[in-house]
Image (cartoon, rainbow, N blue to C red; front, side, top):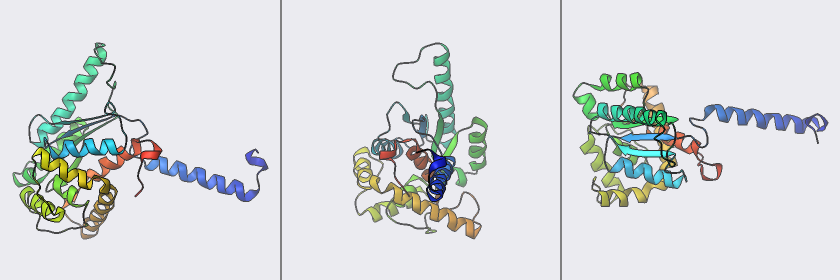
Amino acid sequence: MSESKLPWWKSERNLSRKRKAAADLEKRLAQVGDSFLIVTEGEVSEPVYFQLLRESLQLHTVSVKVMPGKASDPRHVIQTASDEVKDLARRVRKNQIANNEVKKFDHVWAVIDTDVAIRQGFWNDVFQKSRDLKIRLAHSTPCFEYWLLLHLKMTTRSDLVDGTAAKKVFGDELGSAYSTSRNLTEAALNSIITKWPSAVRNARQVRQHHKDANSPLPANPSTEVDLLCCALNDAALEHSRKSF
């Protein structure tokens, strides 16, 4: 039956659904099938985490490339991401692209910690470099383990003064040994990866908490890794996506 022949209440209902679908589409951080480059500061925890999340969302390894930066410094991580984008564009121009590679990255993210950059006074340089090179930052204060902690509980505790403190608190909350050694990391992250939607909700609460408190940015503790996870979620097929 055409829209014009439907009862008025069905037409209104259908129009409401279309408006909601359009609004949801505008809120998305990515589109289904988009490609990602994710460059991480850490060589173990972050790559393992995003590989597990990629599997959970049933995203193809070709579409979501995860790699560590060339050095454990946020500026080098951002530069690595930029260099990777340029290298891909160069190989595309020269027709040197492999069959199992994307021809461009729709989204480029650097996953970094802020603790050292803030303590040593070069955070503004990090932020400006990311803007200049058009690399999105999924940063955590003090470090990535705070994002992991949010999988287990909502907290804005103020004693997470550095990465060492955050890692200890995460290990204590996890109730088992945690370190950046690959075996322990894989065991820990496998045990919490299904809780990432809870971490997203907790991260949003933390962001609102700091907004209400007018906390200086980047607030301690805080994270924007949830934005990257939500973008990956938006890129997944509907049956694999999670709701928050």
